[in-house]
Amino acid sequence: MKHQFFAIRHSLMATVLLCVAAIPALADPKHGIAMYGDPALPPDFVSLPYANPAAPAGGRIIFGESGSFDSLNPFILKGRAPWGQSGLTSETLLGRSYDEPFTLYGLLAESVETDDARTYVEFTLNPAATFSDGSPVTAEDVLWTFETLGTVGHPRYLNSWKKIATAEISGPRSVKFTFNTPDRELPLILGLRPVLQKAQWAGKDFTESTLEAPIGSGPYTVGAYEAGRFISFVKNPNWWGRDLAFNKGRHNLDAVRYEFFGDDGVVFEAFKAGEITSYRETNAAKWAEQYSFPAVMSGAIVKSEIPHSRPSGIDGFVMNTRRAQFADWRVREAMILAFNFEQINTTVTGGTAPRIQSYFSNSVLGMATGTPAQGRELELLQPFAADLIPGVIDGYALPVADSATNRKNIRAAKALLEQAGWVADDSGVLKNAQGQAFAFDILLTNGASEVATIANMYIEALKPLGITATLTTIDSAQMTERTNAYDFDMTHMIRNMSLSPGNEQTFYWGAAGVTEPGSRNLMGMNVPAAEAMIATLLNATSQEDFIAATHALDRILTAGRYVVPFWYAKTSRLAHAKELKYPTTLPIYGDWPGFQPDVWWYEN
Image (cartoon, rainbow, N blue to C red; front, side, top):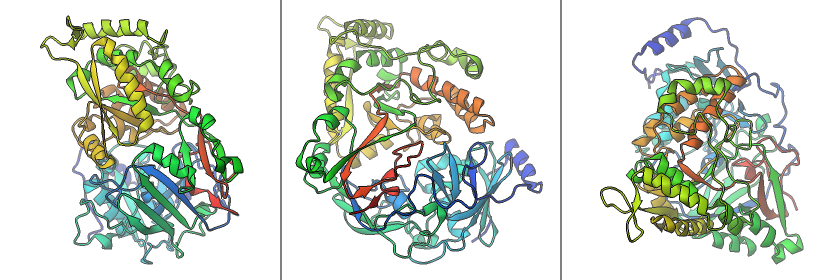
């Protein structure tokens, strides 16, 4: 195989960067890399600050999931792989510390090198790194993986791959990537790419959904499974990385098992019956009222609340603007006005959950709700002012219902719909100038019982406007196919946000996702200002510019009225077997995805 894998054909920027890269680098290999400043932990750190290096090894945890799986390749578009498989069975060049906004430390790579402008990144592999079958992790494995994922893997890998001018083996255990686009986050993004074994896929089609699991170097391998019903991951007794400082106190359990059920309610009943040993509760009212069953009362089940300092993210009904009726922002505002959050929140959660006010609310990255843009935010948005919809610059806040009937907001919604060309006929049916009735479908996954309850209440709330909405539920595999193809009117969307947003924002909101399948741009937004804000935050060299760009992006997303927002929790609620323990020292991200089982352990 050639060590030079590819060259993206020249643009002016590529030429400039290649010339810069030719200048002798003054950078030195480091044990870690941060988005801003230096890593908090020194080269000789003994463990992550929130891990317990004295945690005992052994035991297992059993999770319950609603839905199913039909693939064991989580790195492609086709099929639906089990949640957690990638993080348990494969490793990345660098690993993330969740006690810092965005800092990575050596994992498969023992060091990372880049220059001040971050025009390239070079990783040097740990000589001890091996795959689960005992074969060494090589530089060729890294290059093959990155090229394969970037060209035929899941679309989430494509954006970063396009920004690489050259990829080469630069030493016996080193790989170097030179960039054609300014992007200060790119060295970190590449550090978080999984590394797979090249030899496994010789003569095979990587893009085809399969029940052959990719060979990785992670702490677990795939054990017994039955497609759609259960899967177990078992600790590799020869895991190469168990003695790394980064891994001390991590991956303590001998086995991690997922049981699959058809309904969220059935998952909870299985937990009560002892069939699963951990359950994540998202409903505050249920947490307060429905956890008096015998296992809790006896102490066999423990209720733990894990606080966090991460942004709220967005959780709600997303409108597909590829559909004509949702293309107009006035219609989308009317849909938000018709959603009686206060009444629905009281009914579903007991009224205790705060509403999501913006995509980055509950953090320093959230915009100032309802106030005009000022200072650096305004400066960033001003060049796009003529094309931005009302609310972005002048301020936007979600409506508040004045009563159970939501009359004031319904009147406002009717006025907006009329402005957008939708008027109720003599029978009360809302129609456009062509006589087409306003009707749409809310598409949900089977078993999403709480969201289905919200949807049914919302459907009733839309009737006074003359809108006919229906609810359709399908299995998880069909949902994956349809959302990948954007084949829906409205569906449920969750997007978690970090304290260091970056390249993933393009995958979430970038214009390419309007037509290219498999992106996370479910709403189909195409807003040049949003992409400009993402570019600014990616290349910000100061915290002030980074925060201003994120505030501006938050304004564009929130005032875009793409999502009817639900609520969020400032703490995570985990009920679990008393033998399952977690460290008392918590990171700033609190209960991040992977917190359980990452640093948990089993202790009698």
